[in-house]
Length: 79
Image (cartoon, rainbow, N blue to C red; front, side):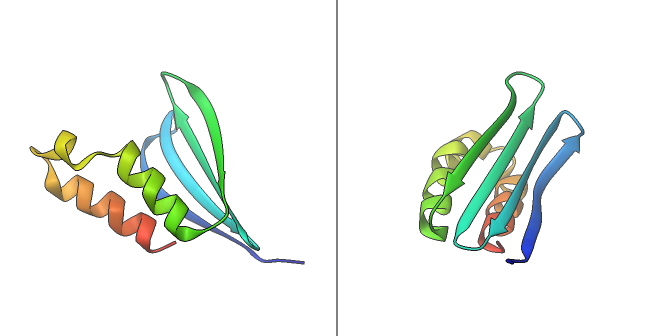
């Protein structure tokens, strides 16, 4: 049995949060938002996860708040 490691990427409240679980070879990302409900994405590798993260959180959108962008990216890299 694989240990499941769970990482919280960010959490504004219980309606806006993102967690990543490492399940053996798979990386399962759950995104909960008040706009779209819950979405689940499964990645086969960390590079695939990072590629998704960089398109999901474009740096340009965080020009006013680079700290937040850096902490989100650091959380993904820590997975």
